[in-house]
Image (cartoon, rainbow, N blue to C red; front, top):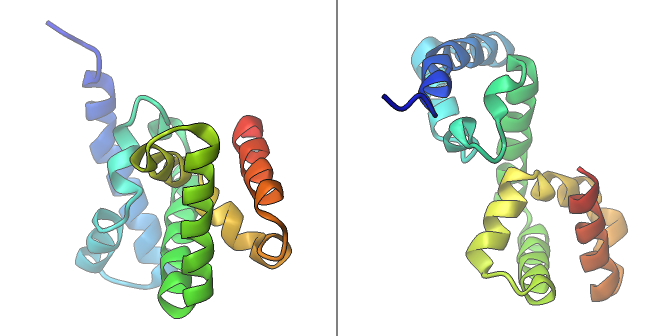
Length: 143
């Protein structure tokens, strides 16, 4: 009997319960809306990822990550310049690293690069391409 992944799968309902309760409380929404909020996030599939091991994090820390994602998504809908900047960074890092765009996108999503870029947009978007890409690479090396 294979046990790899079984512990993580057993933890998942408890993590989801904890997250839903925190979301209900912080967003002042009902159970079904909180489930939708969690399950519709890009973060949710990463909870069981062997690479991130998010299941070890506290519910509040995980909710902060979900909230950063949701805020970034809202910012992107409102701000075409931010959308263009994110795409510019993905394409630039793809060329710099030699990785496929899908790999870079996964890295940016799981390692919170989009949140980092969003927070530092004002300082970064006026810099040259090599500086921006080196900043992203330094961020990824130091997380």
